[in-house]
Image (cartoon, rainbow, N blue to C red; front, side, top):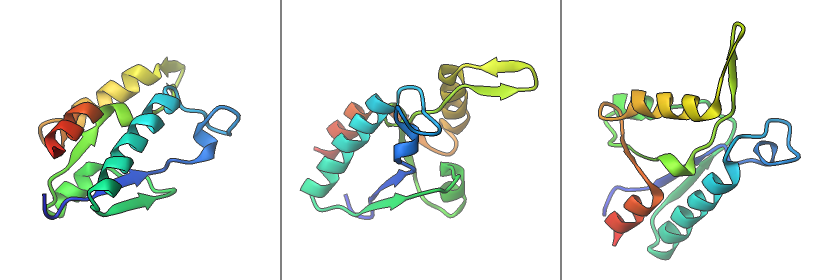
Length: 117
């Protein structure tokens, strides 16, 4: 497992209930991110936390990195396009589908943890 690290992007209070931009499913996503963080710390692998950055695995892919996204450690919100509201679950699925197979492997937290054993 050399050359592997965990990158946590934008886990901040504003995304949780009471915050300014509450995300759908943030509690579950944060719990799964915590599970990954705990495992990485146990086996002493690097952890990077990036705040306030809009990014995507495609950028890392373009730089030659292999990416895995934990789909259940991510959260989003309903979005509006013109007069149509796109439900968070659809935003989540569409974004991950666009990444899958080209820019990143999309796995559950459990699948990632099993691969690390």
